[in-house]
Length: 274
Image 1 (tube, one colour):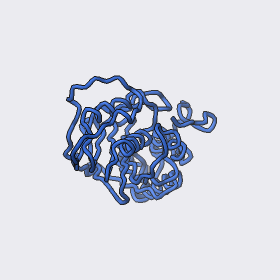
Image 2: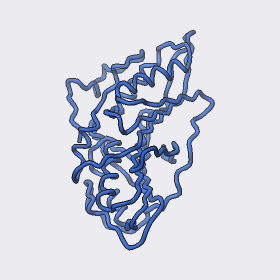
Image 3: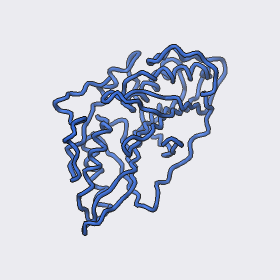
Image 4: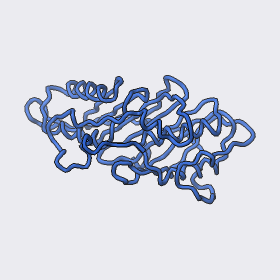
């Protein structure tokens, strides 16, 4: 669980809301800190990105007329920092009463601010309404949720994962992912998709493991990295991708992707709960 300095962190303070542009609202959390606290051993370097979708974007054009849009933000996992989600929402809301000459100016401003805080090049794509973001299709996956299993662990436990004889090359998924926000304690609901090539993962063990995240406190990005690390450590895959699609809160959903291979970029697909 990440440690947040209450004196430096503006989150949770009612006076922090602003509707005029303010880049200082963005709050960085070092990825190294969270990775040092992952359960179960040394951190194995990963590739991937955090895909954020924003559904409540607005600003004023040069004449003061409101503009609304949707946004996609891709933040590389190799960046030094993740961006705390509430600070991201406050930052985006700070555009509401600010004038910009064009959507391109807004997009460039967001890309510059987010890249500076994340410590890497952040990609921003804004889509004006009535156009919509082009969401892809979820991978065809074996869903384990209907398996009849007995659950006893509600904290991350990689030893629950088991392999069997044979080889597997495909996707597993579960919609029973839940963890808790380390800032507010509120539940974070989501779906997890795992592409795996290697010895067969016993489906019942995968389901029990996903449920073991249920009382874990961690940011979305850290939870996905915990899952990636545990599957890598206990199942020894040849290739591995872990992607979570979290339910939106405050107009944002967060969808971390972690991969054993460099250069993997998943479609920005959307589940029914998002």
